Amino acid sequence: MGYSIQIKEAVLQKVLLGNKPHHEISQEFGVGRSTIGKWLRQYKESGNTTLKSKAKRPKDWPFEQRISALIETGTLTSEECVAWCRKNGIFCHHLEQWRKDAVSGMSNTADEKHREREKQYKKEISSLKRDLSRKEKALAETAALLVLKKKAQAIWGEPEED
Image (cartoon, rainbow, N blue to C red; front, side):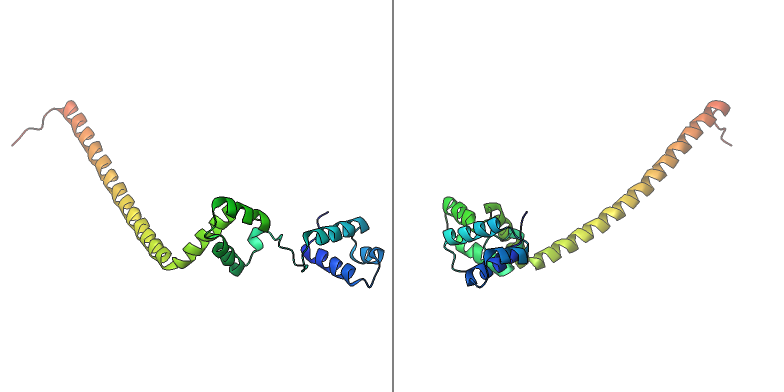
């Protein structure tokens, strides 16, 4: 069963305070004693001085943290970038997407111009389609009249001139 980071942090804080035995903390939070022991070992092995976990999902990273990550990794080689990403629990494609998002955020005015141009093109296309439809109907009507005229000539012959 996966526990949230907040529960892990709360359990570890209680354990590290040492006020209660592990089995009481286990009952209080509904977490197995072996799980608490595993979290405590992981905490001690990683050497973290804070309980805050960096293992957040990339989509949960706040904007400021994303920009900070882009600045940190901006001058790294691809191998160093991969190592940095692995250390921080993300993939290189997350950095690329964040970079694109940051650039697109700066070009909102260009997006507005693009949307306006697209809107204008849609109106023009709609107008041209209406015009084409009208002309196709007129052409079909003219073709039908020519066919009728030929049939009438075949039946009655050439019209006599006065």
